[in-house]
Image 1 (cartoon, rainbow, N blue to C red):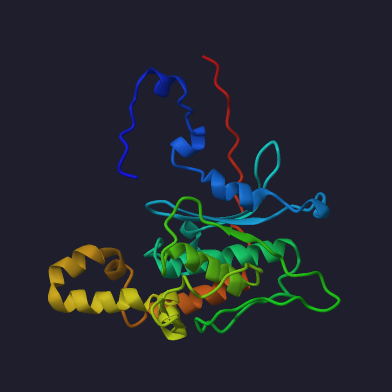
Image 2: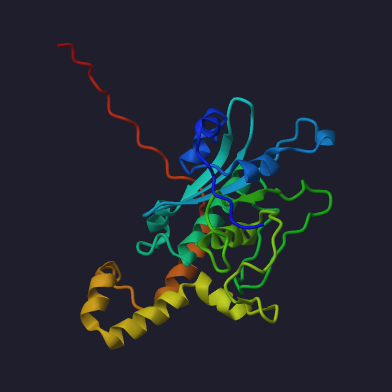
Length: 267
């Protein structure tokens, strides 16, 4: 059958049905959401938890949520703008920062549920696939499902860095290595070393070195914040290692400052 031109006549517009508002705005993939939200009927009132990962120009948002008729309930959240507190002050939207944000979310949630001592996750980061296992005579591991929204799920995408951080943090998230950096789709092999380098920002470090050799002015312009904070390609891995350790030591959110007594003025 050849190409058929759509005739936009009166009947076309009369029968035209618009998509849901949040789909028109590019915010929600309802096809995926339906499958992420609907729970098996024999589980009654058990919530189906989702790990929501979203990216803005300057931030990474990670949340654990479940759906209710009145709206989604967020039980825990972590943001990459919290990472300066743990020693990462630059590159808050790259793959390594996504991993740190996912790790922060996992440790914060397990601390809230008092499961942080039972499920410590993967402490030695090696880039290999890690799946948490239930501990006998203890509460089961917290299971959730990755919600990527409308982002393209290409191999090496940052959204899977956040998921890997949460999995290493002790959450039970069903996944495979097929979308991690280092997976070769042609021969089906996965290089954990390549993935580890991305987790510790070595792909950024390699680019820093090459750009510095090629064009010093471009390097100073693009990595001005790195230079300002005295971060070099050589100490980038150490910075992320310290961040991982600091997150595990204290994942709790920063206490909000009490607002000063505001006097209401009447004009």
